[in-house]
Length: 462
Image (tube, rainbow, N blue to C red; front, side, top):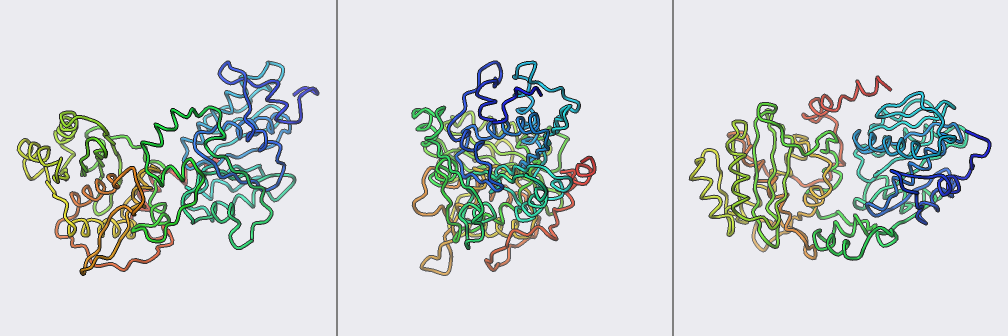
């Protein structure tokens, strides 16, 4: 870099920044972040406000001007690659005289001739070990092993003037992000705190936000756009337990025929106000992976039927369980007539069945026999189911009073898929409802998930 390079990242990018051929416009909250030189910084933020771009600008400047190392930790490897790509685009948009040559340039690392380096990692505690670096933990509320990752990150910034930065949308009143941002117990006084609501982003139009607001439930709106930490004390399946079953390698892609194990489908029917949800589970022995989910809102019954029929024609689809209550009755009858009752399992929703299905879903999560993708809407719908005692000896399982925008359609589609794929002769036992603490130790699924993640190979490379 030349002697004229601005040492202040705000001045640097205001003067020189271009992204995809357009001059960069810095938002006030991006400026406030880059001017904050605190060792510990944390932001509670809305989605899609350009915060990651601000982080990338800071890291590129730090690597070019300061010749320092920067580590970006994402919830999964694909997002880390996107971040490195964004950093590369920012570097490429600089004037030639400010573009220090790259001597390492791959999907997870940029290293400049002056020694500065930016590396992306998935959120695995082992990946943060190694030499000192500035650390950024993105979407930290959604990280499964947050305590272990945080401890490893603190160790990386021990030497010199290195900083630890954290940002996320909230995900319940739990986990290290909530503790740090809310300063629970008064143990985190040394943190500089920022908050960015959706209405602070100049790119959000009121018309677009109204459309989004109408499409999502109240909890999703409050958490994803309004920076609210929501209670989780009466959910059937708490967030800690849901996060413990997330596999960041699942991409919501329906496998091609012949490239997967047995598939079991669950379908919860909707048409106008609520969506039809289709969930596909891959079963191997007694464990399940949620490999695909499709939401169909305001889709004709003819199109819905055609979609399900195409799935049922696959040899690897062993059974489809469909909600035949109300609107779903004719669909279920047509599919049963075409494919037979052995492949189509028609289910009318009753209180007793919902209790049996919900109990089994909880058992599968507690026993570690399921892996789900990092799908926030799905996780919020699972969390939204509450267990409420009725006047009799049973419980009612439904969305909490006051929530709007969904009836946990994805949860019930998942419950139906699990029932369709339940091992023959398996009977759900009565279970004690306890806080699982989110531990993954001893899970039957752990070898399978670790194999799919390629954790050891990945860490060996780094």
